[in-house]
Image (tube, rainbow, N blue to C red; front, side):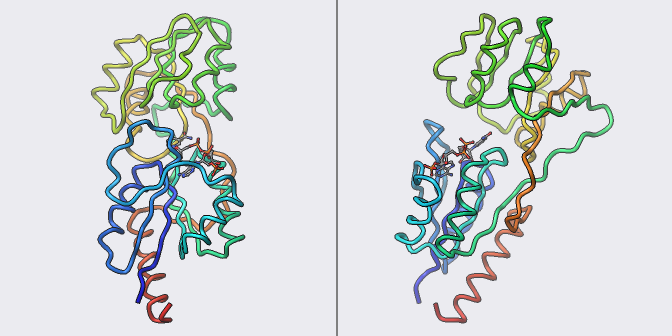
Length: 256
Ligand code: NAP
């Protein structure tokens, strides 16, 4: 009997770990899809394809032509376009589909969060007085800072912001999580940061900056998630593996 062919939409630690684990499953042939944003992604431990599909129609065509029998959206919570495309494509191609999601972070005692809708709203909320900002949102949306040149920006990303920011007072650092509390406290102190702009990504890899902000009494402009998805979603790697196991064993019993 053939193996069950599974496509994972990735670009996250969870997707990488899930794909890696599925390579060890004898009944599964896994393929991990990356957008290609990171110049040198970490080794993924599973077969990878790179680049967009061409919208939901392109993804649906890919699912059919590649004989994909199940798709999992394990992309970042702020990668909204690919998630919407995946939900549409699964319907068009009639392929079983679920998402591996991350719980959003919740504020705890000591946090000074101000929720905002997006990066532009966060920068607008800062007001005219110059501030020292840790812009911890990755590189794709960092260019919004150019419209607010009165602030100092510490920008951290895996690859350089391209083209570089035009704002006059910018320090760029290239680094990849996971980050730890000591390092984040040191970084915030070193650059005299007085406000952090962050996405509510959830997960542990980038949470240390939120803890560091709490410790140092620094406010966080927290970019909120979009509307909740209607796609069936599991919240952990284990739950995703259970669901996949169940699907594969049912398919095996049916002899497909
Ligand atoms: P996005 O806005 O939701 O997607 C834009 C387009 O990129 C999609 O329409 C699709 O192109 C392509 N794409 C995105 N993810 C893909 C994937 N896994 N495989 C193949 N094509 C993909 O995505 P984004 O916010 O730019 O994020 C890009 C990637 O970076 C995602 O894989 C995400 O998991 C990862 N990431 C994003 C963030 C973030 O804050 N947004 C943070 C960390 C990691 P076509 O329409 O041509 O298919």
